[in-house]
Image (cartoon, rainbow, N blue to C red; front, side, top):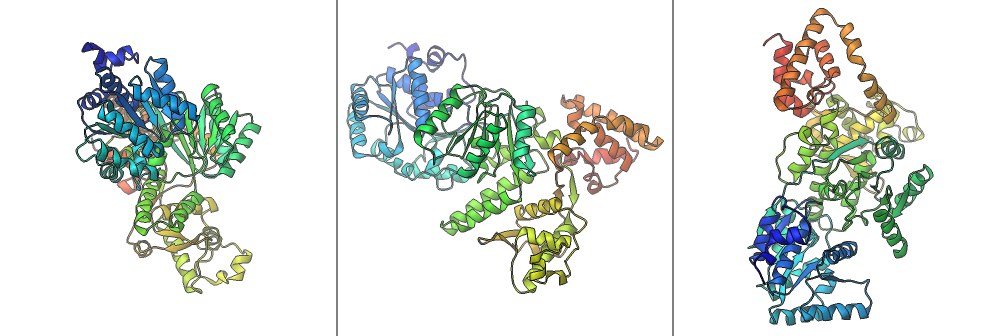
Length: 624
């Protein structure tokens, strides 16, 4: 066997048709070929499969036999085996879809040494029959390597824990000299440590690729009418595109798919409760046909290798950032622009917290899951760059995403914030008054009714018109109060209790009530139609604003434009990415003198305030 025939670069070129490795692929491949163990974290679409397929081919050509790939994903097994066979690599899979005759044929292929890779479900791998066959191959020196895909499934802290994965430590105990590679697209530090411990990969080399997907634009919108918001998103930006819409429940999947189909969108449902034949048919149509929208629970997606998914939309909040990242990563695997869009509201926060609190899990596990949910809520409520926050969760530092192909919503249209300290104190005080008035707890809608001074039957029944907090929040709309309560829950100052989703004060609420904490919250969004209208109108506002400016305002406006142009040139950015004209016009008109005042200007997010705030204040004060 010539050295070139087992060269990783030659295999990459000749078998897979690629001219060069990406990122750490070459290093991972060489390490595995040289008998090393590895833990690989690489984003979806980053080329994880080549990290074990190329070593498997090289080691087989060197006479080292069969590579075993552990995967829980039937769809992925089918796709990868088909692709390998098309490339001239003899591969097979063993799972529940096969007949006994097919299983026996593949087992003969394994034992003959002709098979290069076999994909095996974790529950099958650890059966006495399968381990006996591996023992026989190992005794002949024909067990090449083990690749454990979706390795986060072994961790109880991961987002997709599978008990069958816990038995995979048998591979190290039984075949300590056979190299192993564990791969996943999503694992925080806690999950990574759990993978290493449970799979006995203590001596494994860890490879962590960048988690950034620069071609994906991240957008999270406040739920107003989520169906209509989704329809507007599809009709305005993704006509004829393939995409995935995730819903939390099977019922919502069915209803949303039917509604989209009635609106002329080619949508299909997919969830674990469907008959397997229907699920398979829908999956095949999604993979085969152009422009199909799959409405699904999280039962759909893992192992789907469709490169031209142009969007992933969430109508319900995922459980944690790992789930969100894994699911959104199914968009844009071809590297072309794609959208990750999510509608998020008060009910999402309430439901997710309740599911954690009411689960039968141990308190330690619940505490970790609450922390993971808090991280996702922080991403959803963020005023600054979503991409930087997402990457930061996985331990990767990042500047704001202005250099990405698709800029996140907060960087493109910085959210307006407001000093909601007094509003928060009113809401928390009202919850406290409920306790005093009989020790009872109530839900968000009743709290809003009391704050806004609405005479409902429930208000009358409990005598809440007599509370000192009745009507003290009449200056805010119901939508604004929902936004305030959502963010107070997300920040941990309120928590949701019991089957009726009642609100309870937390320890941190005391500091807010005493006025020791200042809260700047996102302003409640307008309806999507109003938001689009305001954005459209804002493009024409600058000229009108300049015409109505006083001499001093106009001078400040021109000075700000000159400063912005210099920043844009320095950072090689379009000027509007630095600040929109409307933001500069408002700065010139209001002439804020403090950072807190500047933060109230539309278009000034937390990151821009930190980066540019003091320079702007100096400029507005007349300094150069």
